Amino acid sequence: MLKSIKKIGVMTSGGDSPGMNAAIRSVARTCAFYNIECIGIYRGYEGMIEGDFKDLTARSVKGIINKGGTILKSARSKLFRTEEGRKKAYDKLKEKDIDSLVVIGGDGTFTGALIFNKEYDLPIMGIPGTIDNDIFGTSHTLGYDTALNTVVDAIDKIRDTASSHNRLFFIEVMGRDVGHIALNAGIGAGAEEILIPEEDLGLERLLESLRRSKKSGKSSSIVVVAEGDKIGKNVFELKDYVEENMTEYEVRVSVLGHMQRGGTPSCFDRVLASRMGVKAVESLIKGENNYMVGLLNDKITLTPLNKAVKGKVKINKELIRVSDIMTI
Ligand code: F6P
Image (cartoon, rainbow, N blue to C red; front, side, top):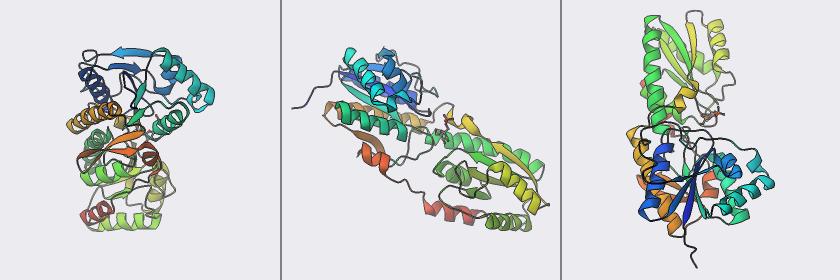
């Protein structure tokens, strides 16, 4: 028999991303729409263990759709990785009569949710929120589109100064394991080379490509480097390497860092968050459990949480080819 859902807890966990607030708002308002109580859990699993909860109503989530970050705060909890921590979290949820969860986050968040669900049989829905876009089962994670726009905007600005001084810039962008941000923002901002974790371009090919750029009359160049790229040197070491091997280049480095995670969410991320929140709550009401809500071919879909965690996200190889052709 279907257990009826009466009180949904919602939380954000792991690295924050623009659109998380819009998702919290959507979950709270969909709950209100179906006369279900909604409880915000602060600081992810850490706040769950401490019972740091706050009632969320349709009105208490007003004015947040356009805000970056997360009003519920975020954390990475070491304690939740222990049985004792998870037991405490479960007790706190029971005390408050929370009977199901919507967890907004990335890989780590979903891994915690899977273990928790196995131990305590509490229905859970995941919403993918990370700028890295590295979750299987969705073409877009919340915050990815906004981050792309932020990165393109930053590179456009760096190009102004690069071309004024005839300089080569190495620009490091986020992406520990995947190169989605680097590849897409790199093409969008017209980068001469893009270094990503999925492909080892090789140092010699990089030099070759920079030589070609110079020869073809380019006075300045932008190389976008994902933080987890496989070339074996970080951006500062790359600068030294190129300066040693190509004296014709004056090189500078810019690490964009955490500014990529902040800012007003794009319209795309706001709409996606709203759709995902509705689907997460409606799925719990229907008795679904242990799924991640995703976007595939513009349809909101459900992927089993364990597949979302284990599945491999692939880079679009066509983009590598497009980038190669564009940098002739
Ligand atoms: O949000 C994802 C991500 O931005 C990664 O690309 C990056 O390596 C990591 O988070 C850094 O996060 P933090 O500084 O919070 O540990």
